[in-house]
Every structure is written in C-alpha cells, then in structure tokens.
Image (cartoon, rainbow, N blue to C red; front, side, top):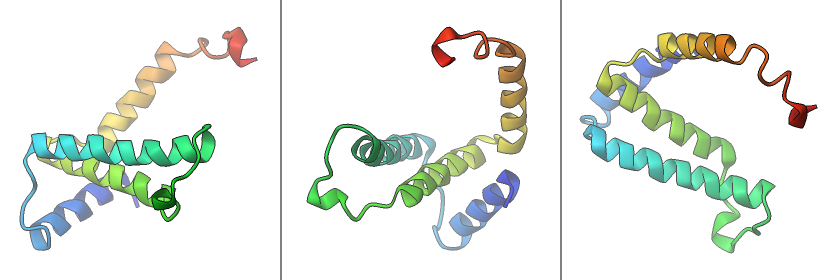
Length: 108
C-alpha cells in the first residue's frame, strides 16, 4: 500500500464508519498520546525499564500503526499529500546530509 492509498483508505473509513474527523487539535492530542504509548513499549523493550503487567500485552506494530493512522488523519485534514511531502523530505535530507553521517567519527 502506498502513502496515497493509505490516506484515501483512512478518509474512506472516517467518512463511512468514523462519522467525521475529530478536529485538528484533538487529533494532535491523540497523536501525542499514541506516540507516548509507542515510546512506552520501546523504552521497556529496548531500554532499561521493565514491563509492568499491564504493558505485557502491548503490540509494537499496532502502536506504530496507531501513530500512522492519526498522522494520516492530520494529513487529510490539512491537505498534505504525504507521498509528495515524504519525497521532498528525503531529497532535503539527501542534499543536506550527503557527507554529514559518513564523516561523523561517532558513527564509525
């Protein structure tokens, strides 16, 4: 599935099942909440914190998908074409960082 297809699928779901989009500020709050849930799993799985009993049934992939879902909603609401935005972002990073990481002694 492409980003464009994902944006369209989310839009179709919102219009047929979700009734309407939450407003942009609500979705921003939801995005921050979902990123927090993703962070919690990663900190416990790859960091030093141990899992609490309530964390043990969490699914990393599902939490990432939740973040993506809300980001797709926000893109739809604000008229952002994520395919084009991502293409431009890769181009920007490529031009800006062409040698930066290769020349970074900390990464050697």
